[in-house]
Image (cartoon, rainbow, N blue to C red):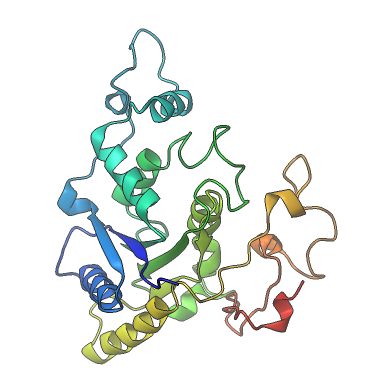
Length: 277
């Protein structure tokens, strides 16, 4: 079996000499050295237009209100999206894995990256009645997805009792609401904490860990989110008793969970007996 894979790296930082720029370059070098094909969408370098507006729909008559959801579906199915969006959708289709590299700004992704998601993951391409249902491994199924995020605060602040809340909860809209919603299999995120003025020795340690994560891009066990078809009722509510006793919050959407001392969901291994069944 050919072990060569195709990976799209989407980078969202305005400074190429930043830690995010260094991690993007490191990932590209490591992946290519392993024999994989890599494409990069450096959103700031591309001058990516973040806002969805009427300019995204050249075929829109303009004589009525703009229904973005419906307009996206019409333009997607008719091949009428703008060239920049079509190019990014082609990259996603081409890929076996997508890596998002970004700094955490105000507990979320930068606006330019959110705009990439808003404009690229259109109705008719990544979701909607023309493709498979959400949370099923459908529309963009068969792809891996990895978040690589830099965070200024210390790691302890993102624990179950940390002031900022668990990182798994903060990234739930990306991991579950973007990746798994569209069928991609998200891996546990890679995070570099205390990223402001990161000392050389800690950057070296971060690269060692990132190298390990990149090598496991296609072998590490994904986050075990539940399937819409198996675990939820017609109102998209989790069936009673599906979760383990005592499970609360967003953890109910995991097939199984193991909580570390910091309250983060621990990485799962393919040979973990807790995953059987």
